[in-house]
Length: 328
Image 1 (cartoon, helix red, strand yellow):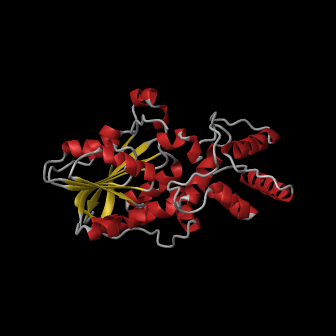
Image 2: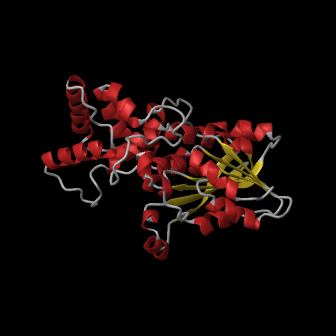
Image 3: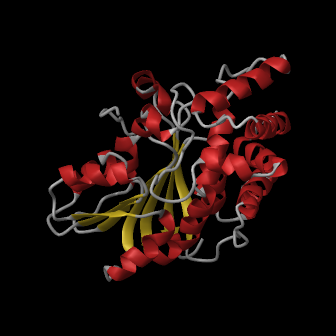
């Protein structure tokens, strides 16, 4: 596994938290600890940082930080309110989220996130819970697979890819062979579909990019978790507290934008409908316009050309900065 991980927009995100030396902050995506270390550097002796992550590998990394102000928990977004309650923390001064998959996760072929490295078709953020993508594909119906690829990946060939997956799966069940067990199995199937369609990917992205993204989001319930936490932010963040959220693709960013704009009138109709579609498909029926207090967007920041040159994975990142307000 790669030990090198460059947190995207790290300085900008931590700057925008407006750290108060004796404040209480949450890093909800600890990862390899880059953002947390920077927050700790700016906190005073009485400050406190709670960090969570779903990935057991990330929790292991936390043992390298010897700081009594930091408490790290193996947990997902939806458990954060209870964690704070157990610590008798009623409100926090700032929250940081760095969404998506990290470089070390992508670079470790055994995690199954990468379509360029052959490994088990897993994609779970927490390999100790739930089922891997390969297991889900063995039982999912064609329409289910198509919907996942279409909604979470915006894949234009979702039906063709879903049909090919089901044919491959059913054929090899009869032949007693284990296909669609590795990342290469799935990536090659998708490449074949794109070839049959005689379509070039205009963005020069790998043909499997959107499908892998969609399956990862679905298998980890990422949209459910994100929307749940966004809805809880007014309950856990102080008025005038800051919320910094880094997104890497339009699905997450649209949802974050909806919640930070506050009023439906300030967001395009297409963004409203698309965000609701993601939430509804995930089984969430409470994605609605917030009452006060609410998150008001104060800034939108993109990576600089210099950062993109150093870290190409930052090119699609968007940092949205919100502030809790009690009234317009």
